[in-house]
Image 1 (cartoon, rainbow, N blue to C red):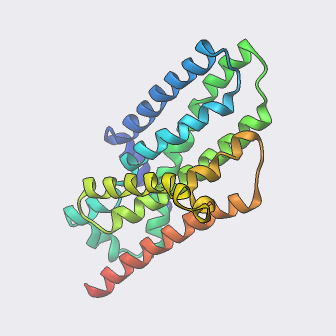
Image 2: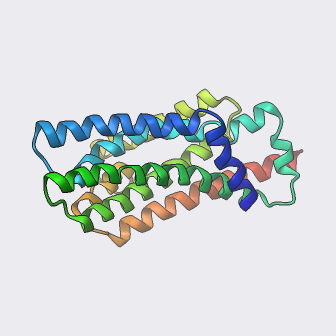
Length: 226
């Protein structure tokens, strides 16, 4: 599995994908940071991640839409299906590689925290809790993106499915309060308040595992057919 992680991680930086993801996020994050700190005189690092969560909705597909769709299109999926590694390990390896890109992006945001420390005294514990929630949200998004990539060989379709699902989860609570606990973006909003809710954390982890397992099942079925 380590070989898969290394291969996928290097691929993100051998191609523009990793740079585009990190660059787009930091550009948008910088805009929101400027508006919050310099225009509205705020020094709450965690509040900027409300906007950061929205950014994820539209750029996570950049990381995930090619993960398995490209393998099917180019025919290299057959190598994955017949490799000594189990399908589950291959899926997890791709997931971890994409998650590492998000971790690097989060580390870059500490620069903004340092700037805030110059202007005020942001609460570091709340900031760390926010970063944890942001990572859990990103992991959930990545796992669904990989799932969407596994059901089509067209990267664009995989990206559209992913974004469409994320946007749908935004509006579901408006139709019924039943869906409030299933809206990933709503679940995340508790973390910037400095609260680690066990139920919300379990929800993120459960959703992530479920998507990865479904991806492995779909790939295993194609392997059986072949």
